[in-house]
Amino acid sequence: KQEVTQIPAALSVPEGENLVLNCSFTDSAIYNLQWFRQDPGKGLTSLLLIQSSQREQTSGRLNASLDKSSGRSTLYIAASQPGDSATYLCAVRPTGANSKLTFGKGITLSVRP
Amino acid sequence: DAGVIQSPRHEVTEMGQEVTLRCKPISGHNSLFWYRQTMMRGLELLIYFNNNVPIDDSGMPEDRFSAKMPNASFSTLKIQPSEPRDSAVYFCASSRIRDEQFFGPGTRLTVL
Image (cartoon, rainbow over all chains, first blue to last red; front, side, top):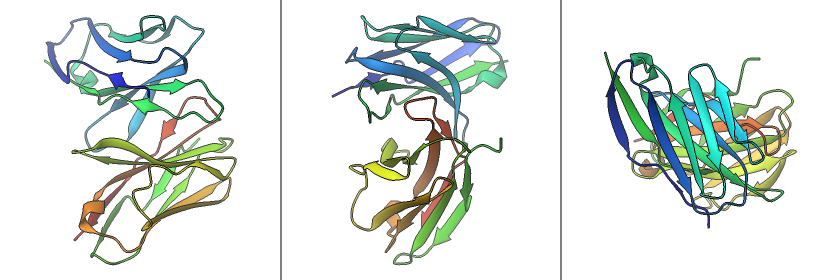
């Protein structure tokens, strides 16, 4: 059974810092991996999707990498801003025709002005 | 595109009443998912459909919960009868099969 772990559960950094959020998964047979952001009281917003054949994806100040063999993904946020404060979740989709996402519990990020 | 649309956004009801949550997926998406999120249990997948057909309903907590997708642009999640422990935020999400998943804003359900 696939398990997705995100450690630490919470992180506080000063504005301007570059930071890395980690995601690990137990089964390397994945189809793709998706990073989401959730603001308090809101739904999940898709940030990046990485296919199993890809090593990384970039969107603005965000860069997500994928290392299937080691069961790890990282989300890199450059020059963090207070507006980046939110909970970040990663989700893994295994191979298989009718596979579903397995979510981590998320990392709650606070960026201090 | 308007994104995934859910209604109502908030629902307050009394124990024993029937609750119906509605979802309109993004046009062109053929997978639809119903999730529930609570502080205690986090995000849980309840059921999902591919091409309007239920594929996996193993997350549906009990027979009081049912979901339908009569066509590609509409789905409902029904709870009958509702109980206080059903209080949660219910999310609908859609995607092309095995592709990037997009979430709706959620329905916050409170059962008194």
